Length: 76
Length: 315
Image (tube, rainbow over all chains, first blue to last red; front, side, top):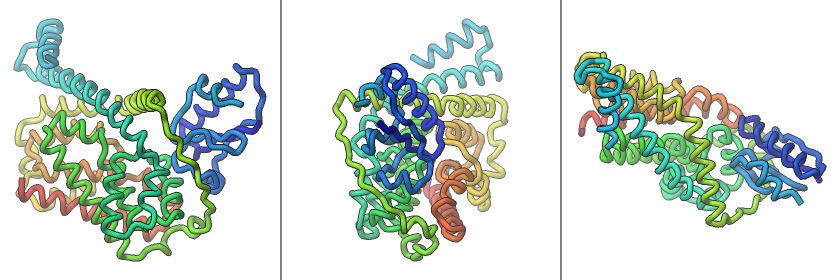
């Protein structure tokens, strides 16, 4: 599984990254988590508000911060 | 009820004398802070629920290939309800122009979004009354509509950074939120926003209370009153580089108005602070060449100056 955190480096993007790591830790799942900060890659997903969470190429949400529990619910 | 509470706290519990400077300043501070936070919490929550129906992806589709005028009006209106944070101004801008939203229409959105919003509305309503709040919104929309139309007429597409036009933009599907999710989103949004703006509110109301209690009435009338023709441009020139949100500025300008600053000047200063700022210029530099950036700031600043004169003349 590959998880991408889209965001241009705002505070919320960092928190989303942390929350995603925690969600993985707590659920005992493993995934490659990458921060995507360059604009062309973010735009490729059609995301217009950051931060956004992408799991295996699919945009799960954008423009908000999700809690650890919410992210756990989205993990396949 | 809030007034009684503030009176009770300041004059009975803390024991300051009613009518004394320190007593009045503290009373004013406590009353205004409580009132503003109550209003903020309720209205931000309601607006956040409305916002869940207008994600930027949907707004983009509504504005795509719209003609000027109609497009500008619609963009300025959507600027009020579409959630926007200057930190995502770049992806938003690219998403708009790439999907065929005309440049002038995109600017109408970019001008209205930070300037006309629920926080400004609440603060103005709480401190100045609903008439001024509505006037501010109307004036903000006018600035956004005309600013966007003029930028559109100037045909400045070549002054958008070249890479923007070559960008490949995917099409994210719009998720329909359930009511439960909307409530969750709104709660989170309200908390985030309050967390972000509370220091501005406290400092703003504090400074306002200080001015209210300690600066002599009519202190500003001589310089910033209606009779000084330079007051409006100076207020705008001071406001443009300043970065704050409506929450911080409004309590201060409210106190300034009490001391004799004319209402048009007050509104112009507020608009300049919220609509334009140095950090915003730095962010937009990523997508705009210097010339367009300068034109954008110049046109919006001029439109705000006009609004200032207009309201000084008619109110």
